[in-house]
Length: 141
Image (tube, rainbow, N blue to C red; front, side):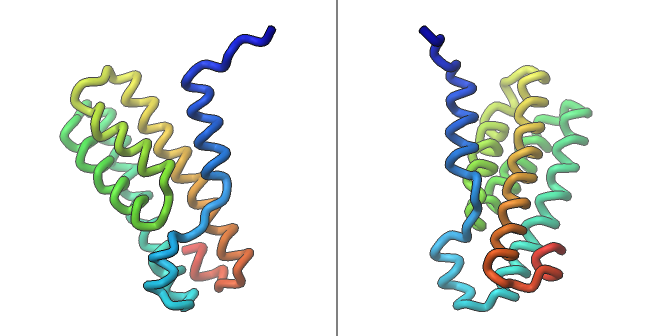
């Protein structure tokens, strides 16, 4: 008999399966009204600001600055929710909630997870634009 997967591996598998392919939320598609360049600009802004915030997360972690960790995790969570990067938003929420109580190794794990999930979302966004004929040069910025 095979042993049951651990809760962590179940959660990881669930996140990978449910977030393997990114699509913009319906409300966002309504807002851009078919304007792929506007959608690409919004995603570009999300990518740029999130990359900066992720760097700040690393700096805060190295300095054990839990207030900055919480602030940056909150910032990334908000942006991720707006563009439908739900797994990233969930990881940031965990980091935000645990930032003042979890030990540094756990915080480091959460920061690493945020980076990985951002990379997955970014890849999914790039694929979406490639699949939907949006201007690649705008989606890649």
